[in-house]
Image (cartoon, rainbow, N blue to C red; front, top):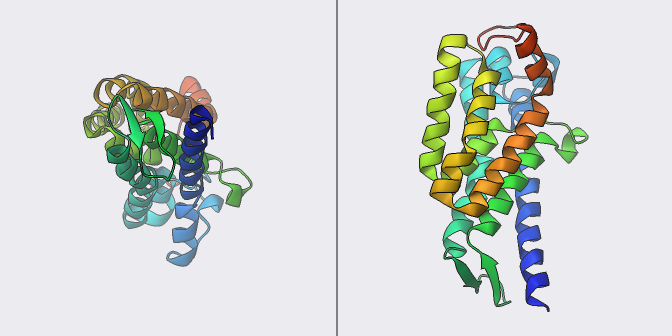
Length: 219
């Protein structure tokens, strides 16, 4: 098989694997199994941690946040050591192929964010990708994850606007991910931020109008 085709196929497999893992609707599953409620029918209708806080309480929100982040973390965390170096020859598969540094991990991370946001189990609807993106950052370059959390807190603590923190931290995360994780991680961050901004379209409109819901409101 042509080496370029082999490399592209390998990256596509990891992207699809990340997509399938990310597509698992954790908030919906936990809400129905443990809290006996459909998280989509309350609050903002979103399946992520912010709406889980409004509808399932602090315990439910922490569980959703952790598991959504885990979806973005697990595959990149294991793939990063397997495909490290400026240009590596992977023996992970029977094929001997050259793949740019950390590209499979970044592809899996992007797949998990897109899968979370556009889950086939929810008719290609889903969450907004922030927690899954955070988990992926800790796998690709953990200092970038810490910077994301710091920026999020700086935006949310004084305003109580989770969407403002998420949008600001997602945009800023491109720089530290590129610096600490390399070009593949930086390109991932740019694409993930684009997806997150797309999923926050209504939040952006409400932020502009001054009608965005604060984090600790029930409606």
